Amino acid sequence: MTDVRLDGNTVRLPGGVAVRFVRTLRLPETGTHPLPPGLGEFPVRRVADYPDTVPEAWRSRGGVMLPVYLREAMWLSFAGTTEPAALQVGVGKVCAVSGKRWTGRLSRRPQNYVVLPRQPWLDGINSGKGTVRQFVAVPLGLGATVEGQVTGEEVWGGVQLQSFPLNERALARWREQEERRRAERPAFLGYGAPPPGAMPPGAMPAAPAAAPAAAPRAGAAMGLGVGGSMRQEVYQDDRRLRDWAEEPAGRVFVHLVTPPEWRRITGEEPPPSPVDRAAYTRAGLPWYDYYDEDAEDLAPTDTLQGVKPVGDWLGDDHEPWQPPAPHQVMPLGDAPGKPVTDGDW
Image (tube, rainbow, N blue to C red):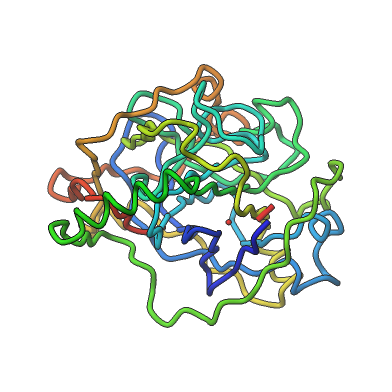
């Protein structure tokens, strides 16, 4: 399998797929809301650079790690994709699109991947018609993660990414069509562009074969549960399944770690605690709305529709909520073929 690389805080998979993990405002667990803003990237580090301080199970899985606070929300931003790619996104080895267990193959019944560059980002699990439920960090062991609710156990945590390119024939056909359209297609500029001055790329070791599940270091591992609902579509693939490669080109396991463990493992200070969402809204700062008029929303599966929010385990969210005024919700429009923004296991 081709190497995955870490470039600054961006995980780059073969085929030009780039994934960033973006901090954001946590939504209330009731109601449906606009897309929350990006508030900077999570710092991402290679597991291989900290062999003496990471949990043993992490060393066997390889990949990267990032720090998250309890109940902190995140979204995944996909950028830099110059050619079509199918990307599988797992949360605790449960597919965030289909709700099925992790697999090394693409599927259409139900669809278990997002299509790049059409899907510019993913803020949560595909849990409703035209909506997703926000990714929210919780510790393993409570049963609050998507993994715990779907599989009945919590042994993996983290996020898993796996990319598939088009096969040779389909890619050649796409390149021919793209060449004819290139002169007349405008560039798309959206929010959350990658920051300038990224660190030089660093090679990431090839992913090892899947190892038996092992208990992570107590208190270190986090997983993703769900929070509030937002207006976001997960787009249906309009290509034939046989147009995609049968085997993935790259994969990465993304470990989530508590801020104290991040400090112990890396010696670095974690980012400051998340921004107060009421203060953000009161300041008149923007929220977002996005659509693609040529794409069809992928219907959710019963499995993901039934996932309960983390508040059912952790109690009510007492942080005050102030909805944005209509003028604060900025339409992003239809992306003409290129994603805006936003990796190995």
